Length: 170
Image (cartoon, rainbow, N blue to C red; front, side, top):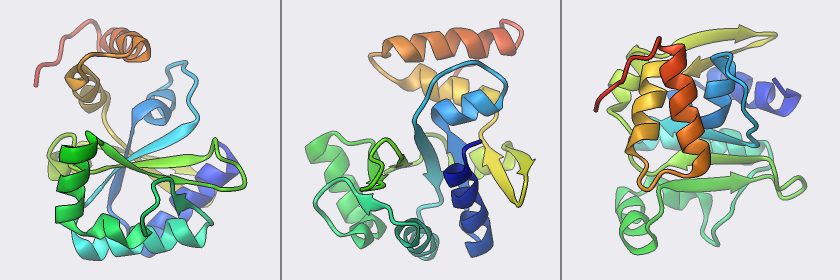
């Protein structure tokens, strides 16, 4: 894990942010080979948790990619509007000094958050713990993407193979 990723997970844990790592980095941490540059997070969408999350990421120097204040993420009406009008699925924070470092936060739970969190795996690192979506949940999330991107198709095949060829249905 890159030092900036470890710092993020350490600080999220210290602040008591409820989150689950999803996407490419989660797939890598399940032992599958894949290139990824961003960090995809499902974050509990209650206002208190989102405020803690925003404090952590902005404290680390991340800024919203969209020209809106970071605090706008807390408002459920804003999230609904972005999904409806912009067809957005995530709110992206980017490091302005190193733009490939980005954090994508789901605007709505890709799967019920309680289920994601309850079945997630904890992985210990040096000075941090990261909560990772289960392989089954990662597969379900990838299967929901329509139309699937080429990388999603590869991820689905790798996750099915990891799960012993089992198909996971929504």
